[in-house]
Length: 292
Image (cartoon, rainbow, N blue to C red; front, side):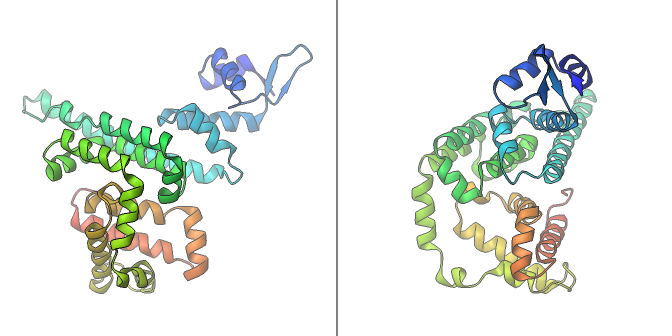
């Protein structure tokens, strides 16, 4: 057991921070001494570690508490997801450092202002707060939507470049996305009503998984990946899909999810999700040079 002051020194946080976490129910002490002093065991320290990781990634305390309180919260799965997000953050910092190095050499580079997606991110946060039911229905959970927002934050410059290419400016993109968010339910209902019946009948992800055992980079397999991307971009709302590059990343993330893998693989065979990820990763690496 460690006292609150020992934990504060160990985690490099203030005693007041730990007291506040206790007050809001985020991190309760393991026990109180007869004198009322807070004491923390190893489980509490592990929880604090999780909190600090999420906090470093920009998650608000309210959302961290909600994630930790979930009955199916998986500590190891959370570490994997946090690692993934930190890698994205590291990549962004590496690109910023490279940009600064170019500026040091006197090269003229696009200004940071052109990469500012703060208005769009604010709109997403407002959408999450005001339409939680729609978020859960179409993203699976609030946590998944938080991850979606976090990925935009961590890869802001690349997302901004793509939006400028597609819409001409960040302002036009943000204006259209705000409209889509405000009318999200109607847009989704309209989309479902217009999806061709043959697309609803044929699950191309199952078709892709059925090729498991073949080279994921083979022409037939990559043709299916291309069909999935093309069909989705032709019918799905831009808010859910974005560019082909972003969609590939999204599919890799979704089918790498431990929970989805268990459900999907149980129904369609062990390794199905892993194979889908391989196929999309091959497509991404060979169609978007320089991207992981």
